[in-house]
Image (cartoon, rainbow, N blue to C red; front, side, top):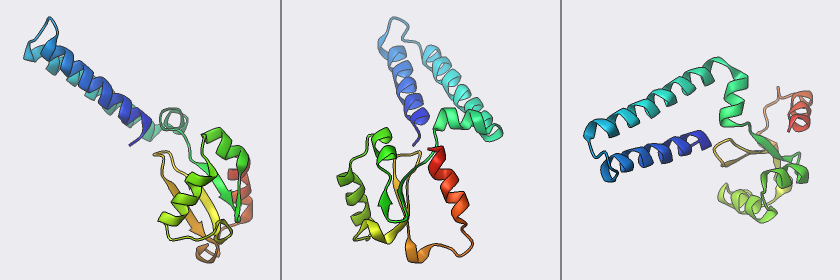
Length: 136
């Protein structure tokens, strides 16, 4: 679930709740509010599929937190992530040490994904990884 999805869910529940308990308790008022929000969500999803810059604004971009077995501390600080949280996620993935990880990424949905050094594909070039490291 992206931050935009969570915002939509909260707005939708608030709009329907206001239609049920507010001064206008008609079914039509709640249906119109819900319909407008769902239409807006559809339009944002379509625009996100067509425009990379818009998608990055709405959804965000992944952040590299481990690179070649070392923590990227500036990215951890930027994302307000602690070393303990990263270590817990490593254990959940069955990884015992940071030194076993080639890439660790904080995804846009808040999950952490890891690629072990021995699982790194042969065709991954270091130049692509260093560009990703500098971008964040």
